[in-house]
Image 1: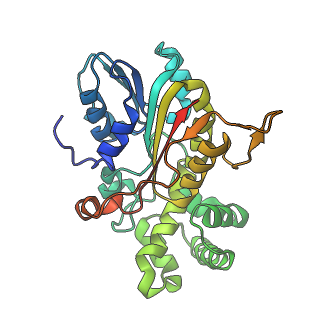
Image 2: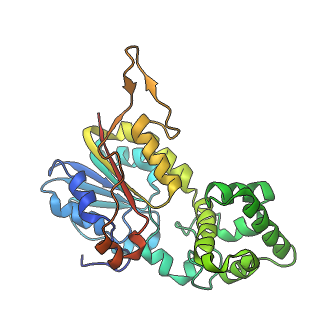
Length: 303
């Protein structure tokens, strides 16, 4: 598979070099996308195996033939069940690049980006029942404020104003497109920070549509049972919410970051953190791929 414009893999060599500790081991790429990370993993394996996940049907078109490789159309929240179904048991390493793919952002009719006018969709799995249209047009105030504050990190006062604008508009006619949504909130958008404001708004809706935080929590809680002793897990995150969840889990074994200790005062946790500070892309990588700008890589070893 040649370099795929579907998605440019972020922190490619850092991530895969850390991941592969056994060239004959079994590994998982939880976010196949354009296949860049998977391709690099396979290049480092001898008789090892790689199982990849992606819930987006379009990503399956990027698959390729290799007897060591399997790609399944599943959300990574089903990791343990899929491993059991394929007879993998525990694996030697797990990689997750949690960013939305360049392809998804750049395909106008998917509705992920405010740069294009498209139907409000934002589903990573096109077969899912909940779309951005339902969130924007049917969520009540409590539900809407929750996603704006939790996932968009808006202040409560900002969130209330956004909901009121949306509610006023949708009471007259449904908000059907990304352009409709942008025009609805335009009186609230600071001129100097338009892109940042809209990015936060679209992010909050996208996370809700795809149940991203719940899926990530379910995945993290499965890792201790899915990764072999001394196996490595590598996560690349793109916003503070998911990064905090990953950081807390690696540190404590739970997403809240609460430490438990045994009788002797030793902290009980399933993973040892391998990098206390997140690894971020170089200036060169960011100049070649602007979407790498907010990436943070964290890794840990199963103990």
